[in-house]
Amino acid sequence: MTEVGVRRVAAGWLLALLVALGLGLWLLVPWGTLPDPSDAELRRSFTGAEIGRGDRFAGQVRPPTYLSMLVGLGLLVGLTQTGRGLALLRRLAGRSERWWLQVPVAVLSVSAAGWLVTLPLGIWRWRVLRVWELSTQTFGAWLFDGLKALGITAGLTAAGLLLLVWLARRMPRWWFVPASLGSVVLTFAMSFAYPVLFEPVFNSFTPMQAGPLRTDLLTLAERDGVQVDDVLVADASRRTTSLNAYVSGFGATRRIVVYDNLLAEATPEEVEVIVAHELGHADGNDVLTGSTLSALGGATGVTLLWWVLGSGWVRRRGVEGAGDPMAATVVLGLAAVSALLLAPVTSGISRQVEARADRHALELSRQPDTVISMQQRFAIHNISDLTPPRWSYLAFATHPSSVQRIDLARRWAQENE
Ligand SMILES: [Zn+2]
Image 1 (cartoon, rainbow, N blue to C red):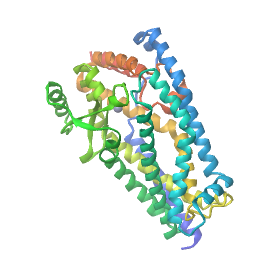
Image 2 (cartoon, protein in one colour):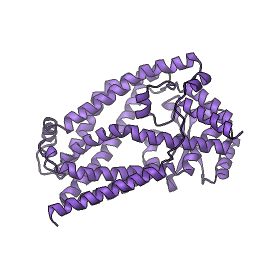
Image 3 (tube, rainbow, N blue to C red):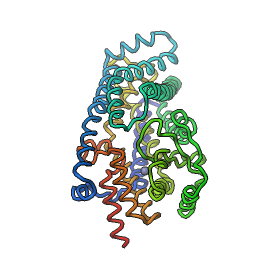
Image 4 (cartoon, protein in one colour):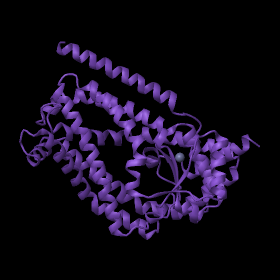
């Protein structure tokens, strides 16, 4: 096929993926009725002192968090999107013919440099969490956690990018097809295997002890028509004092996990409405929905890369197309910038999905008063920022604010009186 023919097929492929992504967003995301954060509800649910305490904590934790993000991204862009940075990485990775060694060396160097440069900001943030008694980790334990996370993320990223460069060298014109299909398979495989392969690296999980609460929770799941064999307890208390629960995996790896802190601090009624929220995620197949949207987004991104990596913009930076080992680092930088630019979209989707799980919890438990008092108590315990700046809420809040969740419960109570 001629060059123009290949381009036409690639354009058709991209269009098909964009349509699938658009359909996925339209059909799978519960676009709905998440109430706007209301000032009246804020004043009604929290005292001035509680709001002030959340403000002060957020004011201390926000600078290291966002500075770290900025510094990390700045370094990444400097190293991977400029001719000078890419030349430096190429010297570091060596000019040998062993491209399969250059890719991981370059990717691991960039990741390690990013980690080192942001380390002081990370320590600053850890200190703030210690002072406010949200973190229970010693410096050594915190550092070890960070190194484990760095190793896993950088290792998986290097493996994925190695695969991309390999495909581009094998099929210089057509790699966008196997690469985008491969990214779909990898996304599902990762979200299926994550709870079994990677969560145990950070926490240990034990089945919840037999007793009235466990029986109640399993009865709740049965009433909900959700298949749950067990509720797992994570030893979160060795890291944090905050109260939480979550669902991960799908199919055979799906699990409902509650923090040990939660069982120690919350009343059985509170644990029940929290598990009812997690059952909402299970019932809505939210992990699978998230994986499907990520897979379609990833495949679209990979196809867009086919154009970018074949363009003069990349050649002018000394990178000879997608088969050049340095293309892997270009992709690394572009992925980080895209993730930041798309954060308002992905966070917005997450908030809608969370609001649906909240509504599910209300329908299942029919305990709006417990939901409201639990949200109030947890917001105070976790020192939630009750008045986040609009930009930070829109870009990075993956959950509705406590005030919105209380508002949602009050509305539900009014509608169902
Ligand atoms: Zn949730």
